Length: 146
Image 1 (cartoon, rainbow, N blue to C red):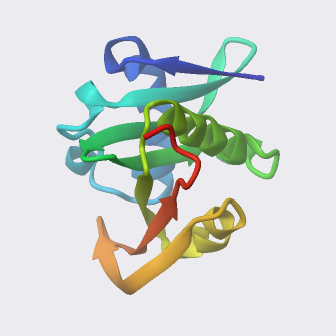
Image 2 (spheres, rainbow, N blue to C red):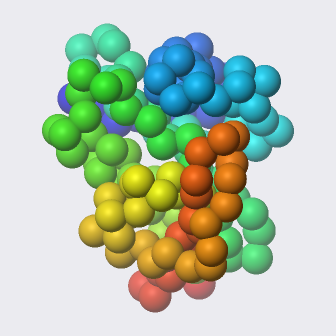
Image 3 (cartoon, rainbow, N blue to C red):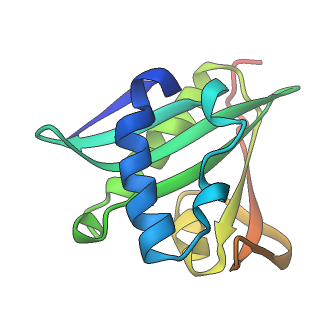
């Protein structure tokens, strides 16, 4: 398995196939909400096993030393193999290399323990996003280059 960092132009087809399967088909997110204005400017991490894309996530630079990780998804048959963890670590390392000081994400409530194991802290009340309960999470990068 390898994780590649790609622009949206390079990642769109593979990333959307994974996101479509996980978010639209599996979780019932409306298709019109899945692609957004952040995709073209984000850096996308795609996990491949052989030539099949099996997981994805993205990092959006929000400016002022902040970034957001989102659209984390791994195909159901590959969950439990630390693929999501490896994608997340790759995106966090990318943020560190870019001088990001703080990463935020919108976690599905059921996924909070996954992100907590990797250093994120939940904050604020839960809220509905695309029909799924979410909470904001934050990671402060003390060792950032800026």
